[in-house]
Image (tube, rainbow, N blue to C red; front, side, top):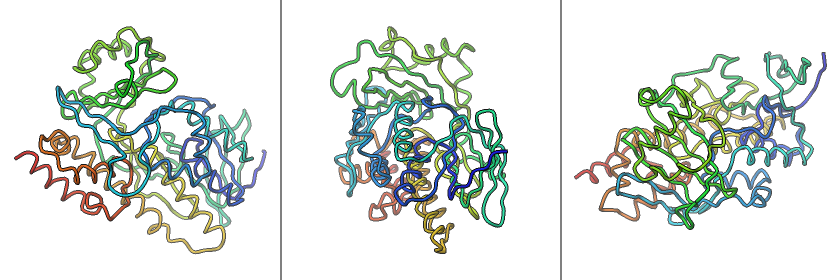
Amino acid sequence: MNKEITDILIIGAGPSGTIAAGYLEKKEVSVLVVEKEQFPRFTIGESLIPRVMDNLAEAGLLDTVKKQQYQKKFGARFIRGSEEAWFDFSKKYGKGWDWTWQVPRDHFDHTLALAIEEREVPIWYQAEVLQVHRTEEGWEVLIHHNGIQKTVFCRFIIDASGNGRVLARQLELEAPAKIEDHSSVFTQISEVSRPAGPEGEQISFEILNQRTWFWYIPFSNGNSSLGFVAPNQWFEQFSKNTSEAFQEMLEQTAYYKGRFDQDPIIFEPIKIQNISKNVSSLCGKGFALTGNSAEFLDPVFSSGVAFATESGLLAAKLAFRELQGEVVNWETEYSEYIRSGVKVFSTYVKAWYDGRLQRIFFSKYQNEQIKEQICAVLAGYVWDKSNPFVRNHERLVNNVALLAES
């Protein structure tokens, strides 16, 4: 049986794993990345938010992504019947990036992975983690790779496996989801007659009912992502055939109905059942869970890649310090920090689905200061305690929703 020794094993070559690898390579740490799929491969999460830019920069990957000329994202539009609510990232509270990108994730993830490999970080593709075993020195990890079983010995594991959720399953860390009973169906189209200007450039969300919405995400390559998020029961009214069902769902939209009728579908619509995920612990002795391998809330505010890159970068920083002999309080410095950001976003996601946030967004009486502070949250700056809508998120969202209703 083949054996490999490395300081840090990263499971998963998505944004969380490559951000972690990029940081650790800069620190000259021995790293091995293992990835179950072969790249390029499709995944969901095509709309970034500005906080991602900070993390790409710190991992030394921002310039690589800039060269790809992805569609720039300057904000987001929410549509409800004849009403529209725009959020412009350049008008948010506080410092930070005021734009980001909309990215085809197969190309984006592959770009990051190639950049990491160019920096001589090895990535094993089509490598499945079969078993992990804790030892006194670290971890013994059994991996199936290219038809061969290999054992990797490492001092620390960063699990960035996303929906694979390797350590959550192996260490029995799965926990009840924070947002229950929601699923998503999505596909991509080749947009034949895309409108010019913002109408064909910026991400939009159309509300079908309080708990059901549709997304439109145009890419610079001429393709666009279309998807629905709704309670599980909503999907039961449509045909069993997924392509037919997706066309029937598009008929339920008001703003976008008929617009994509002539646009070829690139792949059969995919359904993710019960999209929200959670774990009982984000870290432990010699390991940390990052990105979707830890928690995933809901795609409504595009927070997935932001939490993936934030947690991947922080896990790498703390693991590096620990390898240098420092004592790291993982519960305080990692778990509490990440969960504090998740808690802020959870307030906004829950307020979206119970109607409070929709009342705020579509209120006829907009307070620009409040809108700027909420916009900073939507941009991913959920750890900025100087922002009242971060510091007192639950109370202020509730109070402003009551005012918007009156």
